[in-house]
Length: 251
Image 1 (cartoon, helix red, strand yellow):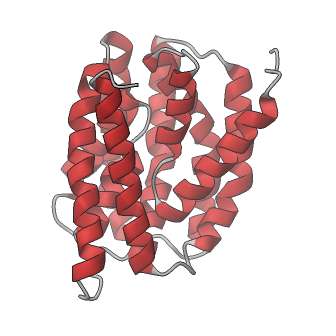
Image 2: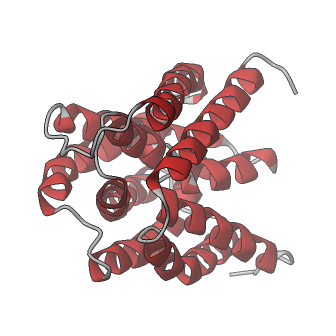
């Protein structure tokens, strides 16, 4: 395996992406996939590379969130099987068909969800509630779009749960824990259907993510929900607008 000359650049990207993902429950795949596709890596190969690297960082993140008590066991169990199924179907579909045509629709959905999160932060002082409905389809389609788009599990699942009032810390921890199994499933399907390349990128992203995972899991215990909800909402909206502009051919 030949290491890329800019290995430390990929380590830095993996560290920053996992720090955001561990603290907010989203954005690792979006950041890393945007980087790889910006370098000319095809969508299917990009998604396979990112999910392979995420196996290391999400595994460390799941252990860290469990250690810090950030996981709702009931939410974890109810998202797990649908997430695994969705990841398998999405990875197989991307290996067989181009997935770029779905990105504008996902981005439009996330734009609406991001707006709802910002509104909730400003106009709702209701205490957190435990979300128990529609978890199976949320987990399935979140993982499906994650595998097809190279990222989006947290942005879809965590954003939806936060918009519906689920507690911030338990949402982030539980969604991150399930993400390990989602990325592992997608990686296995990609390995069987496409094979894996870009091992230097996988190594850099994985090492950076491993280093940041405990820090992100610790950080989520001390952040204040309202400003973080605003940040999450604006982040999701900004990434969604960027995806929509790129899909429309705007540089």
